[in-house]
Image (cartoon, rainbow, N blue to C red; front, side, top):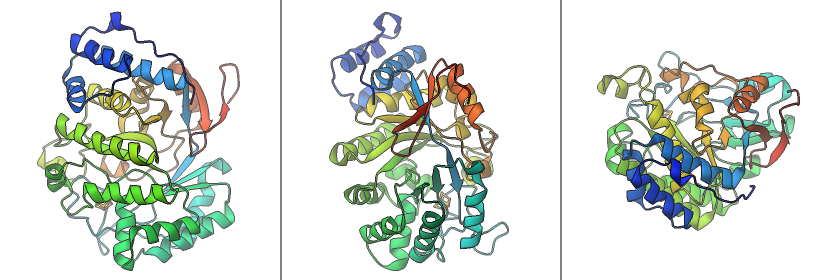
Length: 385
Ligand code: SF4
């Protein structure tokens, strides 16, 4: 992480509320939850962006990172199919479209990816009763045996807790066995929004907030670093969002194990919640997408990295987000399935030249990183992709 001087352009921040929050940031005082809510309520999107950008530049300068990653979703069979009402990906075991990859299928998909450029597998799926510890340890061992240079970022806290339940063992035991088989880090999915009332409304049977945090704490204790997310744009309030971020910030204070924060925009197509809310198309507004990223950057002062997920909010908005506190873009990605199952209209993969063009178009310097956010190579303007 590059440390630059924090330079906040106070004169360009129109809203006095945002300016007062900027004073707190300038003095190194942590934002309170009420400050985060005030930022969401402020109409001064430009001022919020300038503030988040200043903080981001102090940490990272103009460098924007991405990873060459490949998504593998081994099973869409999920015991919570009927209770996670925002999900369009899961299927019951006998339902049309249900699948569970064999090890050969996983390996075949892993081999085809990205012309050998893949440096990270992002592996997540459903809570499948037939996919226990052995299913994943065999998979990780086989992947590492054939592609030892590829980092395995796999299984959300919800999946870890599911495997623990099937195997009747503790989270730490599951995590230790997976680590021994090749698991390197964990993704942040499954967090949704932590508020108990919101969870009751959108994911009533899903692992609760305290347990999500507990699994990540257990992972960090074993040296498995992880990402964190928040699903926004459904039934949650601004206060719910800040409660969620507070829990993430608290665990980060305790363990320092989170690598990045990734707010995830809710998509209403092809899922029960979208029908109930009578929404179609894109649920979140561009303004809300940018505010979620900027407030994440400002409130989560102990997180180094804030990532924009172009699959959900579009490459164009992700490009703009590079001026709203974001220093990392979801990578090249091969075969995204989960968000396309709920109506994401974005492409399912982005080539290296496309991602370089996108970052350079924002006036930033693209850099490929590894899964721990170490820069592997930067692409200066004159350099060919
Ligand atoms: S969100 Fe995850 S846990 Fe919930 S139904 Fe979908 S795949 Fe299953």
